[in-house]
Length: 221
Image (cartoon, rainbow, N blue to C red):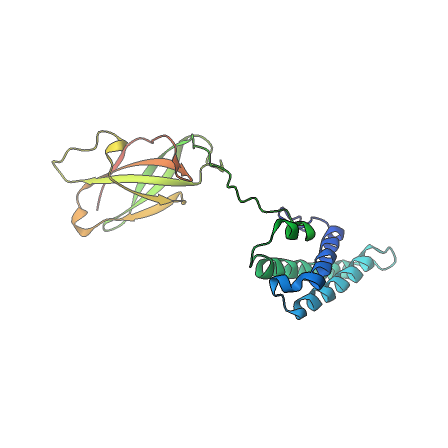
């Protein structure tokens, strides 16, 4: 059986206890979330089926591969119904803290966790895609690519015509876009063909930007 890492308990016995708690709450408070009566009836039937299947699968005399498969099917149906009820009814309107507690859920914390300033540094490799298109691939210079603080990348760039002064540093770049992909494509205007484009990247986490990567240039096809 899969072990869940979210609000759903990890054992079938605990899932059954939660489902029964929900059943009791719905029988008395269903009007608070405008839950149709048939939803409670469906949950009740799924609880009975799952409870019987669990007893059969745990009994030494009735436990068989078929009973185990039937138990899995019954709990898959029960937990799917619970997820549907939570998403469809409990979140519209939002639950109060007392509701969360009565349903065995963790109360919602409305205070967002502040994002940390990224410390990793990245650069990019460029590759040709087509006329007026350049592909960019994020390359880590320092830091861990799997760090959860590295939520996305702010790619800065400027196009420079022949004879114009190139940017002296990343702060001179004028355009930017944000992407969460480590590979992306930039499409340039028809008139940019033959110009040189300069890039630099900063990792970005909820608006907080990490250190600049080095300037990289490529010729726009």
